[in-house]
Image 1: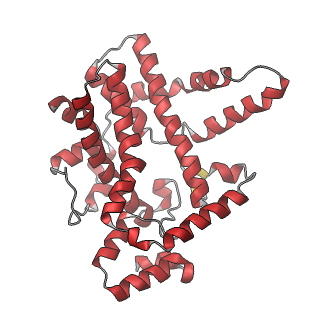
Image 2: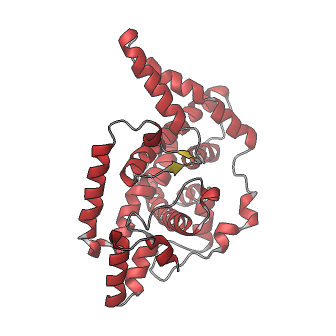
Image 3: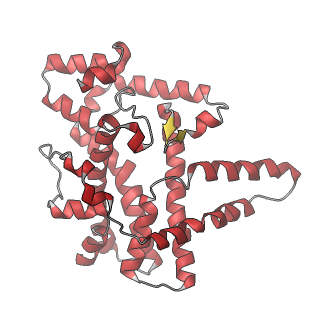
Length: 298
């Protein structure tokens, strides 16, 4: 159990969670702004630069492996080109949060620096980033986002067949608007377990544990508990950044308010508001007030 706790604490968010004793989040907990502007955190390097360069240099091999699964032939050349384009555009430009956890976890569990193990870990780390890239593409389509990572979203670069998909996503948001009672803390926590906890923090660490032969169910469950807590903290931070931080710093234009999303901010706004204020918020959020982002910020 202690090993699982140390392993989850090996990343920055884990250290923050452990430092403040966060295990069962309550509605009173608020993340202070100093976490987002700390000069100390900006210079912190959990993985040596050279190790990150080694991992990133492996990316062309990942694309080659993916394209090798496509049958040869003139008719399949377009499919191979599409795989090359979509993976290269969406995968290698992120922060590498999930990949870094794989690298750190393997250092903690085995510290095997053999060339064979480095290649194996590079492959596993890129698998985590491929999962994230596919999730980002789908998320951007549903949200009709404009930018991500200082670039146009993929569906904006290749805007083919997106119109009907976007209509469906608007219908989903309109349906959610009629069920705004779901916008509460418990629903938010459940949603973030799957959006952040499992695939952002649990999957990279447990995959690395299994790669190193650690299959103990009790240890995996302890990692799951800690990973979900860290994922919740990560979600609160992400919601704050989307709303209040300059897009030039985050690399994307935040549209959570415009999209009427269930976020940490709106959940707390609902919990603190009177019925009259709640109704006003609903009118603003669901497209009935122009410039609603500026209205709510003020």
